[in-house]
Every structure is written in structure tokens, then in C-alpha cells.
Image 1 (cartoon, rainbow, N blue to C red):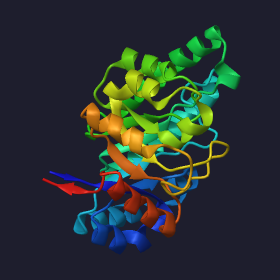
Image 2 (image 1 turned 45 degrees about the vertical axis):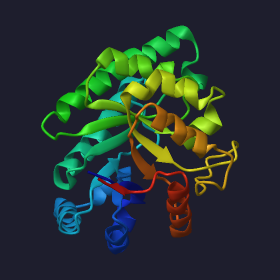
Image 3 (image 1 turned 30 degrees about the vertical axis):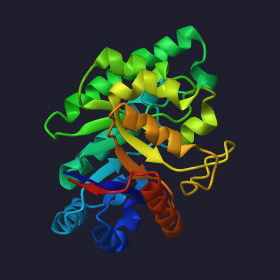
Image 4 (image 1 turned 120 degrees about the vertical axis):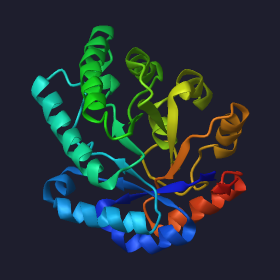
Length: 263
């Protein structure tokens, strides 16, 4: 079995990196923002899919997220969010990704009260149940990513209540370092049973810098030790947004004992 490392790339940047992905045995997590979903012809998606297949590059998708919220109390906003997700699902029918990462949309400044959080959860449940139904024929795992969530229970409630193997968790360790005061171990205690993917990037705890691994303050050695101790093998995706940072991050993964392995 081969464990690929995935690299986060915008759809518009993907084509020029295909050779490098192939040479490195790397997968692509393709970001599809709203303007790409609106402007890209199905024929172009099909062309890219054929190139990925010919190059034997596995792919995942990072769906749109700006100004979207699947748990919005404003029903119009929630439905617009689902429209965008639906466009991403249509693209997935061409690209055939293994996973699609989508943001949960929670933040404590809007939903910090117990009643507000419950309303967000109930709206979210409707959205993710719809998303699972829309993608039932795609053999696609939907991975809900933490961003502003300060407690893991916010997402574990959602995942526990739906309880579907196709709805899993993407742990963004960089976001955790900025927005949560709780230790990584507490997040994994709560959410490791649902863990399908990890977004890897570093920061100094003040801004979402997307630094190369080892250039910030995150303790990746302890993080990977915890995963190994529990036998967890989530997909690893590097979210460092230039070639130098990617190279540094790949080298760091080797030092952490998490390089691409063939068995």
C-alpha cells in the first residue's frame, strides 16, 4: 500500500505542477473557489481529470468556503452555501476525488451562547444530511474542517449525530494553533475516531501564516507521535502555499518519520 502525501493547489495553478506531482509521487488537493466553479466549462474539468488519470495522480477537492456557512440561521445564506457545495459536487463527477474538504462555518462570536450553538447545529445537520444524499453515488468522503472552532465538541456533536462513514473530520493543525487554547491531545481524544485527513502548515499562533512545517511554533513531533501511538493513518495534506515551503515541509515530514511509504 502506498501512502501518498497530498499538496494543496488552486485549480488555476494545478496544470503547471502536474509533472512535479508525478515526479514526487504526490497527490493534489484541488481548491475550487466560487469563481472557478462558475467560470470553468465541464470540458475543461474533463480534460484535467484525464491528465490526472494519465499521470496517476490521486486527487482530493477543497470546496468553496468564503462567506459560506452550512449552519447559518439565515435560511437564504444556508441555501446559497448548499448551491455552492452542489457546484463542487458537480465538478467532483468529473474529477472523481477521494475526499472533499468543506468548512463547518461555526464561530463563537456568532454562536457562542448555548441556544445559538444548538440552532447552528440543527441547521448544520440538515445541510450535511443533504450533502451526503447528493453525493451518495460518488464514493466520496466529505471531511469537515475546523477553522474558528475553539472546542472539539462543536464538531463531534455534528459527526456523532449524523454517524455516517462518508462524513469525517479534517484536522487543520494550523487553525487549531490560532483559534483553540485546548491541547491537540484533547481534540484528538474527541475527534480521532472520525479523523480522515490532516491539513499541515505552521504558524506563530497569531495569524494564519501557512508557513512551512518547522518554521512556526507547532510541535509536529509530538503530534505525529500521538497519531502513531493510536495507530491513526489520516491522509496528510500540505497547505504551504509556495514551492519553497512545500519542499521544506516534505523534508520535515521525512524527519518526523511521515514520508511517503510503500508497503
